[in-house]
Length: 223
Image (cartoon, rainbow, N blue to C red; front, side, top):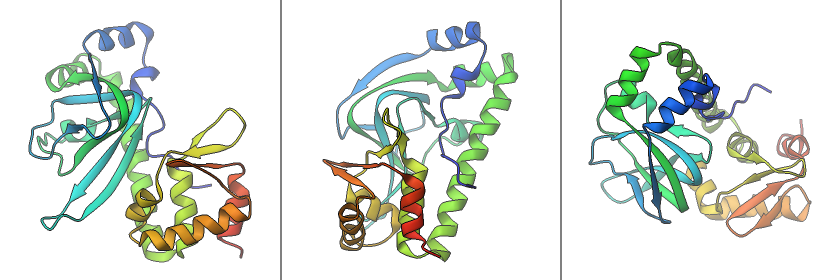
């Protein structure tokens, strides 16, 4: 499948063990509660965050209060690198914690210095940013060309994570899925209920499990 996960893992973990330890010694460990704002739109970016537990939603808002979820970053992944590489101080979106969230903060100046002192870091960053761009491009294509069922299946594939039983799970609410799909919650709920009745997904509180994604994809696109 041509799909890629927007955050395939932390680039830090791919580095030499000694360099990994060096980087993590420079990181401050911080804990936030559900709903806390990690990076407000009105404050300059402090540095690169690595998510240790919980999750972070990147949310953009209009002047009249409408919101759009741009991305959801789970444990084991990082954020803000592209902003710092581009020398952008403001994000244009707020990073909001989902559940109790623990992160490591690598200050912006330390991140910039590491890229100069250890140029091998840049190859890993380039791969990560390219995969994120591909995922964003896929979502734009979906929004323009595909029927809602297929768009929803691809959205689930993009953000779902594997579980111990061979399936995958998605820690999103139906409101989140509607927001990211650009449709009403009622439209998403209708599809989710039908998939649940057919055994294609298993609903839980604020999350859903996909036992067999290829089977779900076939149902969403029965050509």
